[in-house]
Image (cartoon, rainbow, N blue to C red; front, side):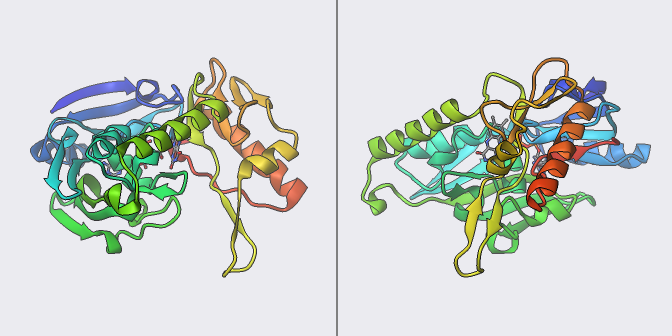
Amino acid sequence: MEILENEPMSRHTSFKVGGPARYLAKVDGIAGVKAALGLAREKGLPYFTVGNGTNLLVSDKGYDGVIVTLGGEFSSIEDLGNGAFKVGAAVPLGRFARAALKQGYAGIHKLAGIPGTLGGALYMNAGAYGQEIGTCCTQVTVLDDAGNTRDIASADCGFGYRQSNFQKSKEIILSATFQLPSASAQGKDVADLEAELAECMAKRKATQPLNMPNAGSTFKRLTAGAADTPVQIAPGYYIEQAGLKGHRIGGAEVSTLHANFIVNAGGATANDIKELSEFVQARVAENFGIELKREIILLGEF
Ligand SMILES: Cc1cc2nc3c(=O)[nH]c(=O)nc-3n(C[C@H](O)[C@H](O)[C@H](O)COP(=O)(O)OP(=O)(O)OC[C@H]3O[C@@H](n4cnc5c(N)ncnc54)[C@H](O)[C@@H]3O)c2cc1C
């Protein structure tokens, strides 16, 4: 285990903002995770797991606790045959999606453009273009704050739209197993999946401000209409209708390309980003009576 003290979290988040973490523990195996939790206990501090920091806004004051980041043995993909995979929590989601696609397995290939780790993806139940990581997951292995490992069947993970039971626990996701459908079972081949993936990547490139620091969608999609015929509404529509594209607070800006993205347009603080997100929420509520719910996770004191 490597321990960094007063490590700027701006180095570990895609927004490129965030003050220092009192400790940042880089762990490469279960013993390391247990040691990091031991450090937190010994110092009387909380702990928090960070993957790629692509859905995270860390306070300018930093985090007075132990940040746990996984690497080493949590970075491997095991092909168990017939579409079954065991994947470490530190594996970039894109790496797993592409590796599975190459073997002719569908189900998660459209998620390849999501820049997080598998652990972060399971915590958020990340999804895109009609696919969600929870759907093909069979089991998740976690470590609880007492240092015990536990296997949780996918059905007990509470996967829903950007939702999982991990959001209500302190458990650290170590790895997960998946059962992916073969492309041929869907009447497709690898080239078809590659074409679908390329189309998703092109859509991202055309519609998302990928050249500026951001953390993906600021707010969750909205559901309207009757329970049996729900209609999905993109928050970006209301944000744009409220005239907020390009609106700035300090260095934070509502993207001119995609209204549901806030970008660090240069020198933004975490406070700028949080204030701007609250301003957007207030304006959309005022104009349309709609309550936007934040998708991005906040860490530390604001
Ligand atoms: C350009 C861009 C595009 C994006 N597009 C999408 C998209 O299409 N769909 C989508 O769903 N998201 C999208 N995102 C958001 C983000 O990439 C996902 O939510 C991703 O799953 C977060 O993974 P991460 O490793 O970066 O998690 P982090 O941001 O590091 O953490 C997010 C949460 O997960 C928890 N967590 C992370 N690892 C673990 C672990 N091992 N055990 C327990 N908890 C853990 C953290 O504690 C935190 O609460 C996008 C982001 C960006 C920047």
